[in-house]
Length: 91
Image (cartoon, rainbow, N blue to C red; front, side, top):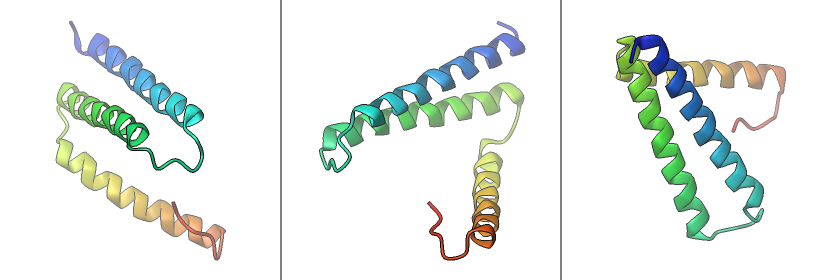
């Protein structure tokens, strides 16, 4: 399988896993503390984490660099959000 086809497959898997989380959240009671729901979401998030790692491998990108970049971007987004929405809480 060539690089392009691998990336397309990985993208579709990302969409499927994200959709599974959305479906789970839609069905989950709003105030749930039931561990089954959390366990299911954990498995989906774990699958997504592996998909990110595999995508990095296909693109020959350092996974740890991507994680570091993600934290940096999150901090930047938080700063911008707070500037635009004073007093609001960042997720």
